[in-house]
Structure formats: structure tokens, C-alpha cells
Length: 99
Image (cartoon, rainbow, N blue to C red; front, side, top):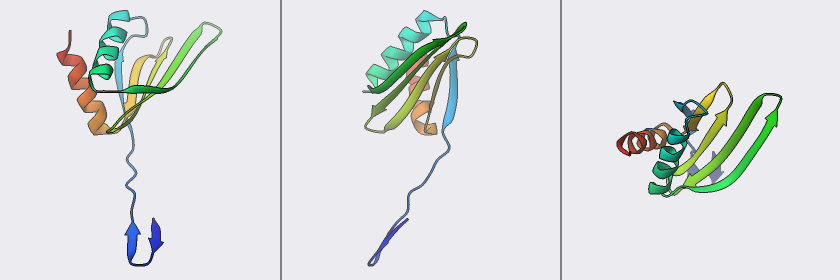
């Protein structure tokens, strides 16, 4: 909250939701997700990848005018998207309706 004069701004914090998209080795799922993200106007803001032992890990932060999502791919964990519920839901619908 910010107080000043007669105004009070309240920021709503929302717990992000996580959508488990597919197995981490499903390259068609990666391509489909990329097309859905592009169609919704997402841009990559930050990316990270690395290897530890037998584990590969990649993380991308993407933004669009409606908000931010985090896409992660990890060995044995799969491909996932995390973000605001409404945005993840719309992305999931776009993903499922694409081919």
C-alpha cells in the first residue's frame, strides 16, 4: 500500500499457477508452446540454462502486455509454464487449439 494525501493504492498479489505442459524431451510440445507464446505477443526478457550431472535445466521469463510467465524445462520434471492464472489459462487454450 502507498499512502499519500487522499489516495491509497492497493496492489493485489496473486499466487501463480503452474501448468505442466509435457515431457522435457517432447520437441513438438516445445514448438507448439513457442507458437502459442508468439501468437500472444510474448517476448523473452531473461533466459538461463545449465547442466548439473545428468540434469539439464532451462528457464525463460517472458512478458506480454498482460503480464509475465516463466517457462521451465528440466530433466525428469518436464516442460512447464508458471504465471497468473488467467494468463496461463489463455496460453493453455491457445496451445491446445494450435497444431
